Image 1 (cartoon, helix red, strand yellow):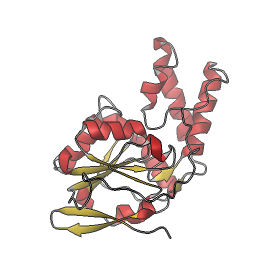
Image 2 (cartoon, rainbow, N blue to C red):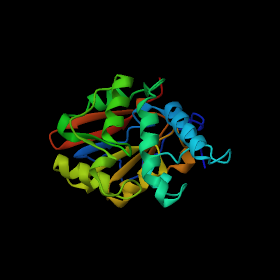
Image 3 (cartoon, rainbow, N blue to C red):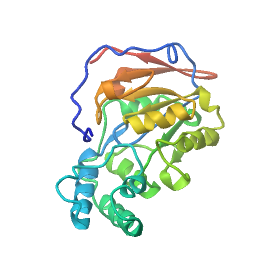
Image 4 (cartoon, helix red, strand yellow):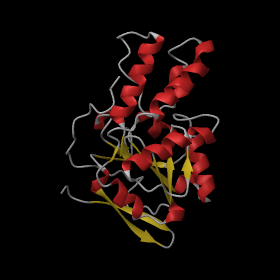
Length: 235
């Protein structure tokens, strides 16, 4: 399992598939952790502290990025310990925002998209989501979907389907921007186009219509019926 923050910078020339080339998208749905903000160190610290408390041992080296905490915890501890573990991990994560920062190009890209055509879709809870955005100095869009809003999280499609519904757009006319395989799988299941961002995972691990080394490689042009993505050369 690739650990958060271990993927080397990929400076290869991104390849755009026909699913993305020249398309006008009604909305752009962004993951948060690892896509808009770098919370990797805080996430890892919290998970390792929780793991030590429940006695998972040195074989546990960190969480699977992009999957809701409850879903991961359920695979690690007995059923009767899941609820208390979720509560404790949440306490640890809410208490640790040290080093949470905006990723390159993320704020500029989000701000270039009209309010009614953008959303954040994250696997963490609403309180933690807003706390991390605030810690990074990132302005949240009006539409934010968290694990608190859906019955099932990534890799299931519900979070992205709900975001599209709240924006009043067709999921098939949305593009999802994600850094994790679980999130990209959820986006595909929802019928959305996909952009993978290298960071927590290698480019080869990201199955997407476009994979970029960072959001600073992307620009959008705004039209009456949506936005169109363009690649730019690295700075």
